[in-house]
Image 1 (cartoon, rainbow, N blue to C red):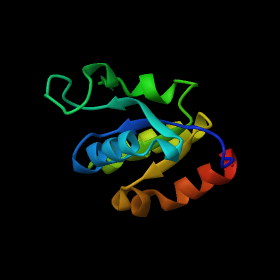
Image 2: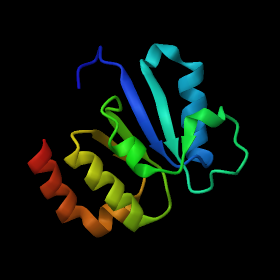
Image 3: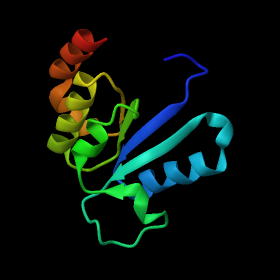
Image 4: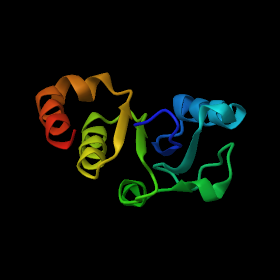
Amino acid sequence: MSNDKQLVIGLFGFGVVGEGLYKVLQQTPSLKASIKKVCIKNATKKRNAPASLFTDSKEELLNDTGINVIVEVIDDADAAFHIVSTALNNGKHVVSESKKMIAEHLPALLELQKKTG
């Protein structure tokens, strides 16, 4: 990804880490990155961001051609692997905080990375 390209992020999870990322990006426009949509489990929970930012449909993020980076900060290793593998297969860049998912699925992730570049 070139340095001058805008990062359009699809974020999975809006706990401490996800909300922290959202706040940093809001306060630092020079980073050339924005969160387009956030996928969450509980759509009725009150959050410190506009309601229009949230969805409970992972496909909405994974299939959005305008999103070029998926950031996954959830605590379910199996769901994280599904998100990451689908995102890679859809040509998106991925950032994951799930050490457990990476440890459990490293060979498959390396193969996907090789296949998708």
